[in-house]
Image (cartoon, rainbow, N blue to C red):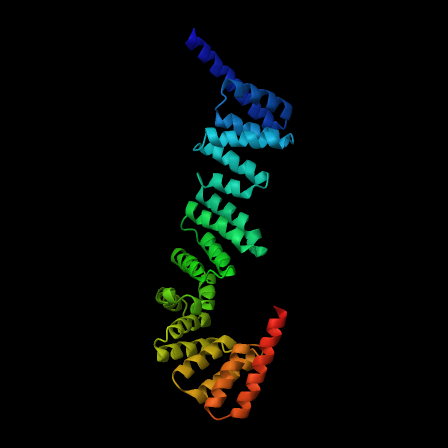
Length: 322
């Protein structure tokens, strides 16, 4: 008797569930609700029924019931890929991107990565870096070795001035996808802030230079990394010269050349490099400061005073903007 009852009940469940799904697909929401609720009564812990109900309730504009059904589906079938995929769709359609990402992370790393990035990008665009970091730190744990997520995490940490954390994220990005340019560029901006990572950064920059022999930026970054450690000034100078030979319009390359020449005590040549840099980027206060110092070193004190005045004016105007 019990066996016959269970056999009959399973047929009733299959019929109700199948009819509910067909009705849901056809947009007959009343029939979908009736059949799926009947199936739920026969199998109250079946995650697939609950996730179908969540879609039905949501399309009927019954949001609280839809959310409750989705939560039950996740609780009753936490590892069922069919349920997880349906939950991902439900949470995506209801603009709950982070929940969608968490569901997707259990069955599809690429889809989860896409959704985590979609959740974080508006926060990055709005410069809400602290909120973005929370999402991105979770994302790289759930979806490891994803270059896009690591790069985004680095940008968020950079925005918070958490430079060591940013450097670690950028280095992981390079390890995953060494061809991506952005992490090298960001690392080049924070060399003075990350002394402990400079040896590793220098290795990555050197490899990037070898892999991109036509890139002025690659040679310049390698030179900056050496200069930041006060290492191999002659090598750094050669690298900067190569960078300028590839692109003479970059003011930062001429500034770097002046910095390296200062280290070599070649002050007249450093002055010429800084002068070229000021012509290309006249509003850069740091260049005027370095130029003033080197003018004094070669005895051009009036020119040094004029550069100090320009530096002071630029600093004052930049502070006013802030």
